[in-house]
Image (cartoon, rainbow, N blue to C red; front, side, top):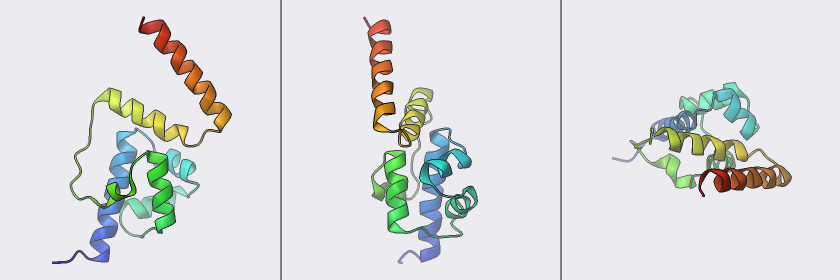
Length: 117
C-alpha cells in the first residue's frame, strides 16, 4: 500500500527531530542555523506541515546527512556520547564562516597534537 502524504510528512518530521536531539540541539538552535522560525520547525517536526525540497536540502546540509536519510522509516539512532558531541559540533559548524571554520580546525589540530602524541 502506498504511503500517504501525511505519513511521509510525519516520517520526515520525526527523522529531523531525532537528528536534532542526537546532536543535543534545541529547536531554537536548529531553527537559527536553518534561518527558520522555531514554530515553523516545530510544525515540520510534528508532521503538521510539509517542507520544500530546498528547505529539506538545507536541513540535510546543516545536519550533515544525505537528503534521503529523512525518508527512511524507523531509524536507529546512535546515543553514544562521543558521537552526539561530534554531531553537535558538525551541526553548529554549518553556521560558521570560512574564517571561523579555519580557526576551529587549527584549535582541533592543536588539541589533537597535545593529547594524542
